[in-house]
Image (cartoon, rainbow, N blue to C red; front, side, top):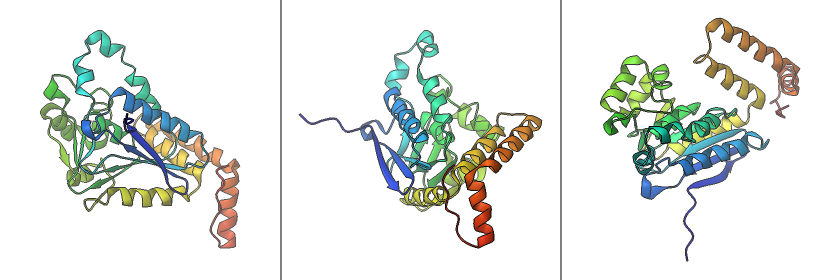
Length: 260
């Protein structure tokens, strides 16, 4: 009897770079609870692995992830939705401290787009589509599609995406700030991995603090954010990487980051 294929493929794609590949082609990589949980588990493990400095997540050439699993949604009533384990899983994904990059080819819809919004940088292939079509099912997004989306793309675009279910093209997503770069079709993963490798060569603690402080801009009043930023800035002055960075500058050589 053949074993079912693994729904999440995990590999070391380059030095200090971990690649997660959503692998549910028959469901268009729909983010059912088991697959979403596997992503969170992999990120939890990566968070404590000193050999992982950057993570890339991708799907297939036609679908990054086409939403949540409709069968799961159809089976739940209000009580079931309120008791859903998914919010805790989403919180673990959002809490991943290291740089997280998405490589998107094809469709990124619903929960797929909410997973994209958990990432720090998004590389999209020309032809990719980003949407929140939940209102087509008589519901609304439940994992960032109304909370995070307008902070990234603005009120009017978010309203259009949610109320009408209209997706953004890759170029529109670039203009809106949802994605960082648009590349030729079929090249999203290669470009994302090259970017991840560049980040992985940089000071790990500075990468994590930089990510944390930029994300705080969406969640914290500016005066409180400035205080957090200064505290994070000051904390880095006690690290070995800061000493190495300044020493390498004066010695005119490349720094050797230890992540300490």
